[in-house]
Structure formats: structure tokens, C-alpha cells
Image (cartoon, rainbow, N blue to C red; front, side, top):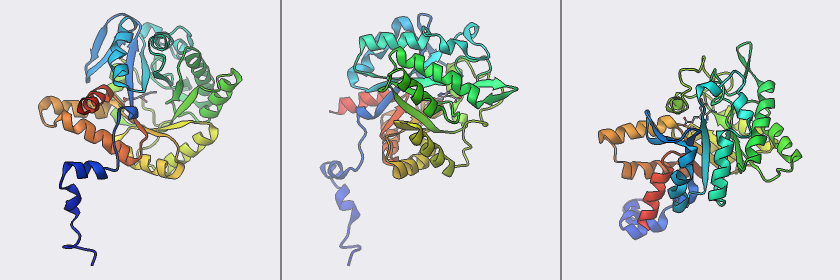
Length: 329
Ligand code: PBG
């Protein structure tokens, strides 16, 4: 008879060695991508709504990243903080081959040649209206935006970015970027597509980090996905794979693990999730109040991403998590 009392599920939980032996999923440092905010002017400023995360000046960047490299974090995702006087309606600064991200990429590649650099492809940090693409009559024009995003991707790749990560949600941009990269012999520049990116309110603190929250006119619902949908995410992912994506990103993270699981199960492609700013801020607020214990909750949460099917997680907790993982060994 295959039930109690012959079967006792608690037997395998009795001892630590037994629990370790049967553990199905594990979080390692190799699963982590650390996002950082880079600015041109010197100095480091903490982001109000994201305690423990900073806008880092180019002068201190190499030093700032050192611990992450020493901990063995495989890749870093760079996001630019652009001063108001360099923002315009078409995101011109995104196409400046000496912009803050290009400079950051060069500095980091030189200092840490073995660390993967991921560069966001989207115009929102550079536009005065805060949208990811080009506005034509108040609507983010798809094809016009793709033309600019392709140029942005090329500039990033040429400055040393290993992985271009389009987070703009325009249609057809993966194929356009892949074709343009290949034409310039940048065959090994990888594309991590934010294939299923939702129009989420969890991005609030990120827009604060970029100083773009007050600027954003309207919302991003005409290009980012409706949180009500999941089948649509599979179509988005399928198209991006056909267009040449090497890796897929789902965003936000924890509230969208159902999407991660469906994508991973269906496509078996390297699948990542972005634990976004709002998820970070919620947890930090609880830690500050003493309501949740960071030492336990951070790792438990990241492990949930792995269990959900992620090959890796882009998280502001990457360095904290790596410290916790490494100090256990
Ligand atoms: C925009 C972009 C956003 C984030 C990453 N890239 C914000 C947005 O779409 O408005 C959010 C990340 C986060 O919240 O941590 N291309």
C-alpha cells in the first residue's frame, strides 16, 4: 500500500545531509546578472526608492564593480542615467558612440575582460518624453523606432557590449538588429531579447533611478504587454527566437513566474527573468522595517526563480546573494 504509514514524506527531510542530497534546484553565483546605473559625472549617489543601489559615476565604476567580479558574478547589465540637457525627443544621445554606456563598456572591458557586459537597447533613458521609441503624432512608431534601435545596438556592440538586450518591445527589432550586426561582422554579439515585457507598475523605482518618472507622458501600454495575458507571451517569444534571439528575458520576475515556466517548458531556450526595481524596493522596505529577514528571503526568492525555470536572474540583489552564497562554502 503506497500511503501512510508505509510512506512518510518527512523521512527525506529529517537531516540536513538528506535535504541537501535530494535538493532539486540550487542557486549559484553563475545564475546572477547585476544591473547597475551609470552616469557621466563623478561621484556616487544612492537612489531614493532603491536603498543600497546607486547611480555610479564613470570615475568610480571600475572600483564599484570589483567586488562583483571577485565574487564570480558572470555578467553585468548597464543602464544609463542621462542629464536632462542631453535628452531630446528622438533620443539623439543614444547614438553617440561616446555616450556614457559606451564609455562604461570600454572601461569595464579593459579592467575585467572576462565579465559579460549586457547593454539595454531602448531609448527611454535618452528621450525627453520617456518612451522607449520615437513618437509620431503621439504614438510610438514601430518601424521608425526600430531603425534607431538598430543603430543603438550597433554602437553598443562596437564599444564592447557582449550582449545587446532590446527591452523596447517593438515588433521585428530582433531580426533587424541581428541582420545589422551580422552585416558588420559582429556575429558573436549575442541578443538577449526582452520578449515578454509587461506594462508593469513595478518599474516605478527604476524610472526614479533614471530621473524619468516625471517625464513619462502617458504609459507604455501600446508596446509593453498587458499583465492579463500569457498566451501572447508565448507568441512573442516564438517570434523572437525565429528572428534570432539567443536568450529570452521575462519581466517583471516573481509575479510572472508562470510565464517563465511556460516559456522554458515550451522552447527550451536560455530563459531569464528580471527581478525589477519594484520587487527590490518592496523587499528592501520590509527589511528596513524588520518585517522580513533579508538573510533568508533574498535567497529563497531567487531560488523560486530557478524552480520556476530560469537559467539566471537579473537582480539588484546579485551582489548580496553572491556574498551569501560564497560565505556558506
Ligand atoms: C526601459 C526599461 C525599464 C526597465 C528596464 N528597462 C523601464 C520601463 O520599461 O519603463 C525597468 C527595470 C526595473 O524596474 O528594474 N527600457
